[in-house]
Length: 74
Image (cartoon, rainbow, N blue to C red; front, side, top):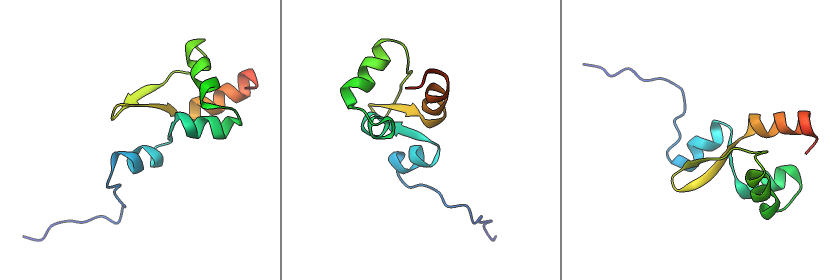
């Protein structure tokens, strides 16, 4: 029996999978916002950002970062 294949590329690691889905690590968010990783952590503490944990590391959704920039001018 022939197996069906699709032409959709599949990420091979958690890191690449998260990247294609719009997730960023703390260092990437800091670079994206033009600030330091410590400032990103302060924004989490203040409730401005909501990270989620994947593979033992905190990740941030790019859409939420963009929304923060639009609404609060981060």
